[in-house]
Length: 153
Ligand SMILES: [Zn+2]
Ligand SMILES: [Zn+2]
Image (cartoon, rainbow, N blue to C red; front, side, top):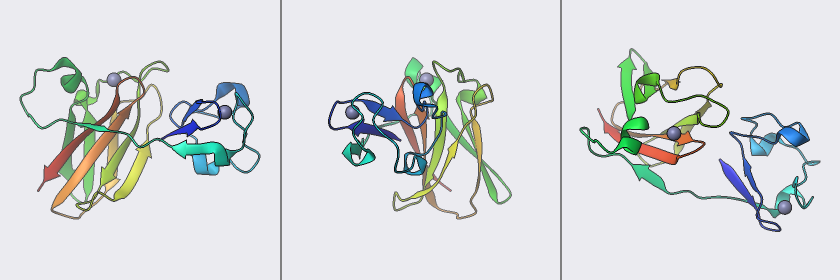
């Protein structure tokens, strides 16, 4: 998730962290602790607000929109697990451009689990999820925002 410093408009992105402050990429904002200060204006964590993001939904299975193709979400059930693949696993996983996390939401749009992906590995996540029915997958690209797809089993 991303957090905006309301004092100076600095954006803290969990998928990027803050190298200068020694905060590694994919550190949860809630785990930063009380001593965290905005790297720019030094205001406290209380000054930060979570940025609610719009999700780009991919509805068309035969899309040719290059941005949709590059962030296309596929879910495959393997026994009681749900394997999620972004763009056949070949979406870039570089420091400058990567899928930082893949999230699973239940039929009520409540977050079930968010899996943060390590760099240089494939854009694939596996969820322990055996609920049949409706669910939604979202993936966060550090360059191209959030993509979502609804599934029905
Ligand atoms: Zn600030
Ligand atoms: Zn991307």
